[in-house]
Image: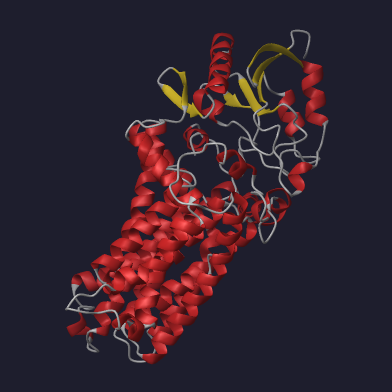
Length: 526
C-alpha cells in the first residue's frame, strides 16, 4: 500500500507492470492522496484511518434505531475488532467494507423514514435529502466493488434482501431506479480501467490469480487447528506478549473458537432477522434483515483463510449486529429485565459479545487493541525506524532494523537513479512474502520485477518470469526474515530454482547485515 501507489504515480499499471490481486480503487485513491500530500507513511496511514472511521461511523448510524447505547456498543465492537489485525494500514478490504457499510447505513435511514409513513411525501422520501440518500447509497455500494470485486456476493445478498423488504407498495420503490443508476455509474471507472490495462490482464489479476492460482499457497486448514495457530503471521504475533488479567484459552484454541463463531453468528443473524421481520415488518426489522444478508455474504472471507485478519474482517460486522438481533428477535425476554423505569436491555444484549471478547478470544482483538492504545501513550512502544531521507518505515525487531538500515545506506551509496532493484527472500524458490518497503524507500530506483508483492505459487512458479526479472536487475536485496515461513499449504514446497541460479551466476555479495544482504551485478556479468 506504499509501493504500489508510487508505481502508479510513476506511470505503471496494476496487473500489467506489477502484480495486484484486488480492484484498482484503493491504489488510485492512495495515488491521489500521495500526489496531493506526499507519498509518506503518515499519509498512507491517514487514508487507512479514514477508512476505519467510515466503517465505525457507518455501524453507529446503522444501529441508531436500536438506541444510542446499542449503537455505541456496536461501533466500539467494530472498532476494537477491525483495528487489531493490521492497524491503520489502508488495506483494500477495509476500504471496501467501510464503503459498503456506509451504503447499509443510508439504507437503514431510508427504511426508518419509510416505515413511519406509507405516503412518500410524509415519509420524507420526496424531500431533497430523501432523494439524495438512495443515490449516495448506490454509489457507496458500487465504489466498494472498485476496491474489492469479491464483495459482490455480500452486496448482492444485501440488495436481494433490500428488494424483498421494499416490495409491494413500499414508499421506497421509487428510490430503486436512482439507487441502481448511481451504483452503475460508480462502476464506470472499472470499465475504464479494464480498457486501459486490457481485459485479459484485469480479469487475470482480479479473478484468476487471487481465486484460483493463489489459493494453494495461502489457504489454511478448515477448521483451524486447536493446538497452535496455522498462520505464520499469527505465530509471529504471539511472540509479543502483553499482560491480560483474565485466564484465556491457548492461541490456537482461540482462533478455532473464533472460526466457529463466524457461521454461528451469521446464521443466527439471518434466521433471527427473518423471524423478526415476519412477526412485524418495521424499519428496524428490515434494516436487520438487510445487514444480516450482507454479513452472510462475508462468511467466505473466513473460509478461504481462517486467520485472525480474515476472521476480524467478518466479525467486525456480525458481532456488532448481535445486540440488535437480541433486542429485536427476543423482545419479550429483554422486557423482563426492565425495572424502575430503567432499561438495561441494551447492556444485557451486549453481554454475549462482551463474554466472547473478554473470555473466549481476548488475545487478538482486545489485548492487541489495548497494546496499541498503550503504545499511543508511550508504553512498551513497538517498532524500530529505518530511514532514507525523509522516508521512514518501521520494523518489529530492532536488530533486523539496524541490519536493514546498513543495507539501505550501502545501496544509497552505490546506486544511481534509474537502476533496477529486486527485493526477495534468500531462497527465491519459495516466495511466501517480501519486504516491499525497500521499494518504497528507493522511489528513484525501478523495480526489476512485477512481483513487488511476492506470493507462493505465483512468483516462484515455473515460467513466472522472475528469473528473467532477476537477470535484468542491477541490485538485489535478499531477506532471511521469511525463511522460517511454515503453513499447512503449498507454500511449504519449493518452486522454480531458475531465479536462484541466475543470482548465483550473475550477482556478487556486497554487504550482509543481520538478516539482510545486498548483491550487485558482477563486473564480468553482461
